[in-house]
Image (tube, rainbow, N blue to C red):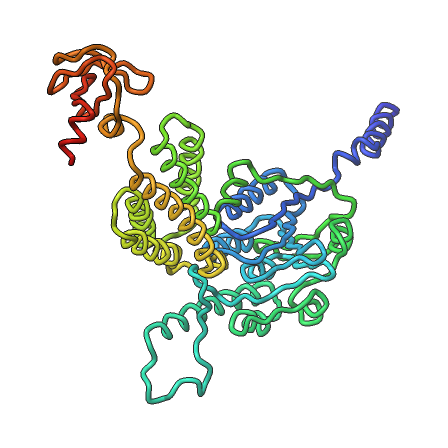
Amino acid sequence: MIRALGRALVLLLVVGSPGSALAERATVTVIRIDGGINPAIGDYVSSSLEAASADGAEALVIELDTPGGLVSTTKDIVTAILNAEIPVVVFVSPRGAWAASAGTFLTLAGHVAAMSPGSTIGAAHPVTLGGSNPRPAEPGERDAKDAPRRDDFMEEKVENMTTAFIEAIAQERKRNVEWAADAVRRSVAINASEALERNVIDLIASDLDDLLQKIDGRKLDVAGREVTLATRDARIVRIEMGFMNRIFAVIADPQIVGLLFLLGVLGLYVELQNPGLIFPGVMGAICLLLAATALQVIPFNWVGLLLVLGGIALLIAEVHVASFGILFTVGLIALAWGAWLVFRVPELTDLALPFWRAIVPALASLAAVLGAVAFAVGRAQARAPFSGAERLATETGIADTDLAPEGLVQVESELWKAIADEPVRRGEKVRILSVNGLELRVTRLEASKKGDG
């Protein structure tokens, strides 16, 4: 009896000890999305969700600040959140953060949707990868007698599908379905206070600690079972994005890809023109490899890429071929057209390559560099030769020995073996007629002048 009481006392002491309480302390996994939504971000979210679930985390908190991104990646992330085995809390933070476009879908998909004061959500209308903003005509904008164009059907199809997608998400999470549809159809955006009033989000929190205190005790439906959150004073475990995913997240931007591609081509061109410099060639190869890697992450148009390559080839050819600027002009047009087409694909995204803000300045800089090179090469070719056999053929010298007909001739500070077409005495001036290897054919300068006269 005494032994049993002793064991019970020891057990109570162990369970009630600080070490035991620390061991049973809840864990909350936190990740951060700051920037465009792309496949690298999608991989980061899915792997973090798996890791948090495997570690038995109380919840996964996604701190979100994004202007938007690829719809395909957004769909993958939303699907992962809706089917998660642990609660997912999407927190638009810090103050001033955006949950724009794709971010609206992610926020609505969370089991708990929260925002910081001063943050914004909305403007979820689909945008093509080339940068245009499809919108079906409002009633009365199109003449009923006119048959709708194919583009109108495609735009309506895209908008209707995207609207149905966000409505399904909002309905699943019991949030404002009407506002969600307007965010897609009319690109409406609201601040955190309005979002809370309209049942778009669940709460407003000043920071992560405030968020964890406010969601503590909240009951959620997670994968068909009721879960009560215990996040008060929870231990926070942050999962940082991996090195390769960070690289992919940075370079998966059409503007970065275009810049890398141009720098890579210029680097290789400089190396080919000046073998042995090494640095331009190495940097050019690295830039092209990074651009090729980025094209594995974001969708692109092969026709546009081929036009870009053809345009660059024509610009380089202009340096070596006298086309009076024709190749240069055609190359610039092909390069501009290809750069505009390369990211115009059916995929929808907010990552675009603006024509006037990105393509035109880049091509203007490239045209200025290559134009300067072509001008310098043209001037060099027009100048009289100043080295080699061509230069010697215009020079005069002094016979260092008698030429009868062979001997030595001094040209500037060099002695050359020479053959004269008539006897020349030592000290007389000669004119060089031609160069045959290391041997000159000369004639007496006075005889040359008489012949010219």
